[in-house]
Amino acid sequence: MNYLAHSFLSGSSEQVIVGNFIGDFVKGNKHQTYPPQIQKGILLHRFIDSYADNSPIIKESKQIFQPVYGKYSGIIIDVIYDHFLSVHWSEYSKIDREQFIQNVYTTILKFYPVLPERAHRLAPSIVYHNWMRYYASFYGIEKVLKRMSIRTSLPGETKECIALFKKHYSELDEHFQRFFPEMILAVENKIINPASL
Image (cartoon, rainbow, N blue to C red; front, side):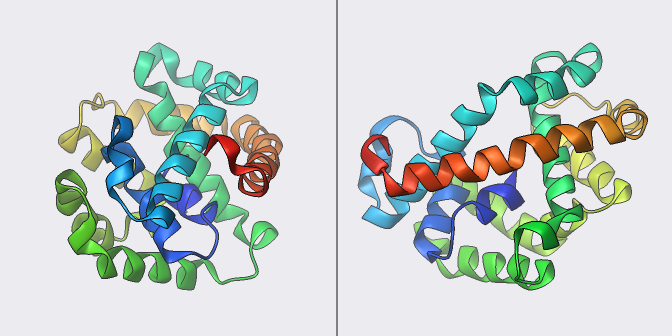
């Protein structure tokens, strides 16, 4: 799950959205230095990542990209599943997708002073380049992956990735449609019974 799905799964609390956004940048018990609702978002982020990493459906999707991306195939699936969330948005939310994305951007910038240093550098780029909107198209995914290959250790195999994505589009769509309702239920159960958050 990438930024769009993580934000969607955060619910309506601004601080939970912020915590979920910074989840990758806050390691160990450093989450305890944040206000309780941001802590909840950070721990929710970790739960979502763990659930996805252990999902047999996600593992099926990863296998498609492993010949090209190896251990980085999970990052590709994160982006691609955000694409399918964009495509099927109206099935999961009554809020307009563009409005939802703008609300998330506004929230992130509102809490900019409390973001960790690495998120300080990333957040303005995500907002300025409108990364979450780009997930809806092949062109947008290509731009996001190119930018990620420059900013991170992700291999620069973008053309091969897009070719595989197009070839296996229906299969990956079916994977997403099986996985995401399960993910929503898992998050709802975790929020209702938050003992391990």
